[in-house]
Every structure is written in structure tokens, then in C-alpha cells.
Image (cartoon, rainbow, N blue to C red):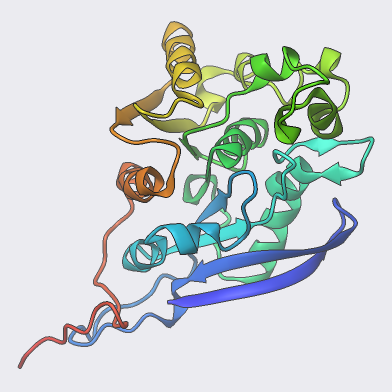
Length: 279
């Protein structure tokens, strides 16, 4: 499994950005001379949570081994703490970067499928919010959305105050991310509004999971599941023991991979798999 870190100049952000990529193009499987890698790969654009980085998913989960086994490319950009939205006041156009420029750059640079059915977006917490909003906004690009413990925070953003002692829950912080909060509902930062603007067959398939001990977002996930059922939105919602932590996300990113119905191929030889067929 090739594990690449690169940087490139992003026009939508007007700065050089880092991305980490899991790329199974070096896969070797002894004992199967007929195995051939695909010419182009299915791709998951995977977003980190607040305070995270491009290496979070590799450090916190076993995603590298699972992606190699399934011949899946995983692209992990940095979203800083900006919730993957466009902010015209600051010039931090993270939504444009994630939904358009990053896809275009990686497809030019690596052997990725350009088909919608082969292109997915996912994330956890802040990245789960980013996956939902950008997966819906760029529904022509992404066919499936994975939202693990998504930060469905719009109501709490609108109820925030300037005197909150927690910096990333202060109204000043939210204004620096989302702009005019009076314009938030109904905008392209509002996951419900994005759903309601689409025809049923335009909405990507949605996989959402939340830990039953996740005091941060459990209630909001239950409410969003209810909303999607009421609006007959095709989705899968799973809960299980766990909190807002890597133990839960490590478990449920594998379940999400299984939900994607990726073809499972022979495991490649690596330090975690030294099985060679005996003759």
C-alpha cells in the first residue's frame, strides 16, 4: 500500500495545502499470478474532525489495511477547523476545494475513476458535517456519503452566545466560519435545505452512525434520522456502544466500507500480512 503525502496550490483557498493519500497501486499478492489491479480506482474523499489533520484517519484507524484489501483509494485533505464550507469574507472556500478542486486535482494526478458511482465522500464529527453538506451540494460528483458521528450543529450555532468560554462554541467563532448566521438556514451550509432542493433520485445514498454514549451529538443524529425517514430519504442509520472517539470510528469505518459493497480482493503482502501460499 502506497501512503503518500503531497502538497499543491489550491486556487479556491489561495494557498498551498497538504493532502494524504492511500493508494493501492503497489499491491503485490504472491500465489495469484492472475490477479490484476484495476486501471482506475474507486475513491473515498475522507474528512477529519475538528482539531484534526490529514493523518488522523491513518493514526486512529486501520483504514490503510482495509483500503488495500478492497482496492480503494482514500484521499484525506486538511479542513483546518473550518467545517468544509465556503466563506466569501475570509476567502476560505473549503466547500469549493473539497467538492470541486480536490477531485479535479486528484483525478489528474492519480488513476482514479471519474464515474459518480465510484466516487464517495465521508468524514467524522466536523468531517461528517462536511461530508453531508458537500456530498449533497456536489451530488453530481459523489454517489455515497459516510457520516460518522456528524456534527449536526446548526441549531446550536444559531443559539450560540458571544460570552461562551469554549472558543470553538463561541458565536464569534461560528461567525468566522459561517459568515452571517442570519443567512445560515436555507443556505448551502444547511443539510436539510440541501436535501429539500434535490429530487429523490439526485440524493446520494447516506450512511450515518453514532455511538449511544456520544453525549455530544447522539440526540441530533436521532432527530436527523427521524427527519430523513419523514422525508423518505434513502439512508442507513446505525447506532452502537461507543462515544465520540477513535474506538467507535475505527469500528464503524469498517462497517461503512462493508456498506459500500466494495469488492474484496486478495490481501496484499505487507508487514501485517505475510501469508504466502504453500506449494
